[in-house]
Length: 135
Image (cartoon, rainbow, N blue to C red; front, side, top):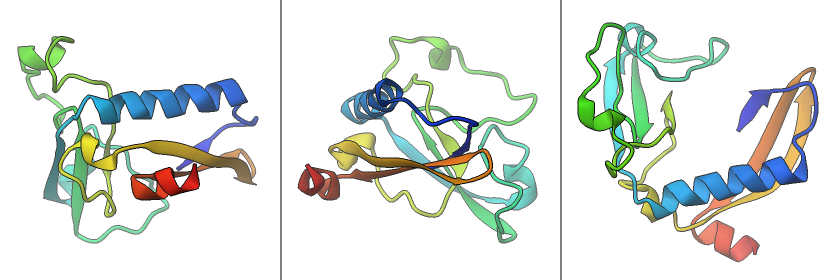
């Protein structure tokens, strides 16, 4: 995972991230995918990177939250924290997530955090059997 930061992530912060992801896995959140025209996808609440190259149609993956667009009416059940599907989680243009629920991931382990350039950091992690084998 690449992200912007001028300083390294502390060991406590890395543990907090790992714990959060494992909480999401344990919650067995539904993973939603849809194919959208790139123009529509970039108007959603999905994360995407301007520097990345995307085709005319993109795969949008949301975990625990619906894909929403400007002027969408938010369904009341998605504002209820007791709803199993309510969770502040990831919605992004993605080609690599191939699970139906977060429980399929089994376990998440951060292996490394490093700088890859001016103000850009990277967290390398493993999930599933790779995470189990890493431990």
